Amino acid sequence: MSQKDKIKWNEKFRSNPELLAPREPSSMLKQFLSKEKNHIDKTALDLACGGGRHTLYLANLGFKVDAVDISKVALDSLKEKIDLDLVSLIESDLDQFSPEANRYDLIVMSNFLDRELIKRSCGALKIDGVFFVETYMDDPNNEKQNSNPNFLLQKDELKEIFKGFEILEYREFWNEPYEIYRMKKEAVLARRLI
Ligand SMILES: C[S@@+](CC[C@H](N)C(=O)[O-])C[C@H]1O[C@@H](n2cnc3c(N)ncnc32)[C@H](O)[C@@H]1O
Image (cartoon, rainbow, N blue to C red; front, side, top):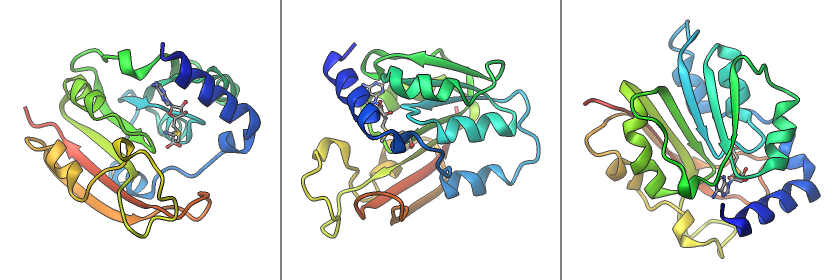
């Protein structure tokens, strides 16, 4: 495990427990999933689930969710809120994580960016499965200007990453008002074709 990341995130969540408070899921994901009535027995993977806003939302819709995070503090807090028949909590360093092929109807990566992990995870979608990525992008008007550029998307980058997928939707927008810094975000819903 990346011991440094694990310590950093555990300390961050211990000293700011409000970061693990219930939060709304992404509105783009909500709009997309509301188009279908039945999600019972579908499978989802939430990469870097944190406080679990997407894990909880998906489990409430009926998805069976594998929720992965490096932080035991985050996973322990999530454990108290979930139905263990629907959610598997996986404490793992995503740098070393490769999900099983053809397993998921939906993969979610939000407010986290690991380009190599996206590449490694595409094959974990079933054919017609959908990858949802939503995270911060590089923008001159971002309030926080010292973010590590490796963790920021460039304009249209998600379309490029998911070349070969069907792009169901692509958006750029300003982040949610509850976040500390005003930051531009980019999001995609991409369907696996082959
Ligand atoms: C900003 S939070 C995002 C949480 C959630 N996806 C959301 O959108 O609310 C980032 C999460 O990434 C996790 N994380 C950071 N580095 C990681 C790694 N190498 N492996 C697994 N999880 C990691 C942190 O523990 C934290 O929960």
